[in-house]
Image (cartoon, rainbow, N blue to C red):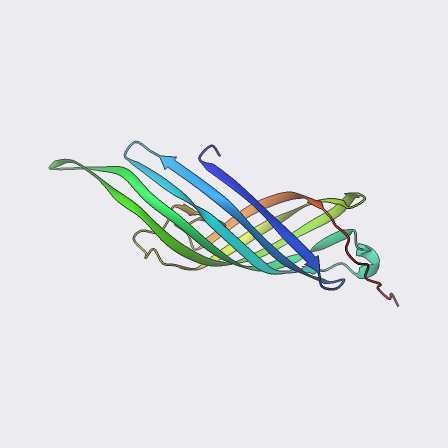
Length: 178
């Protein structure tokens, strides 16, 4: 979408053969213009949580992952309406809403898969389903789009992510298979 500039990344560390701790963040710059209004939004976000591998250790052997992730997200963003117009019986009214800084809180559930393509290089995808917990904008001035969450006019947002992962092995975990 030409209206959105979004960049994000994450770090994941294996706690054991089934659970990984995940920390990620990103930046969003969103601009939307229509015949009667213009909207600007930019900001940063973080997500933190865990990934659960549903594959058995003898199947995953440290190279494959099929599971579900649970995350908490926090977004800090500025939004503004530099101009908008309203036509009515008495004519056209033009105005603007100044830049405001706001916060948004959400949770995310993300099932997906990942597989090792080459030594220490993996690819995968996840489907993210996010639920808005709170935004301090109030119900009348909710953001059209905000960092880390997506469509701010709804309480549920979804997305599809594909990613390339460079694995940095820092220690070897021995798994006893019975």
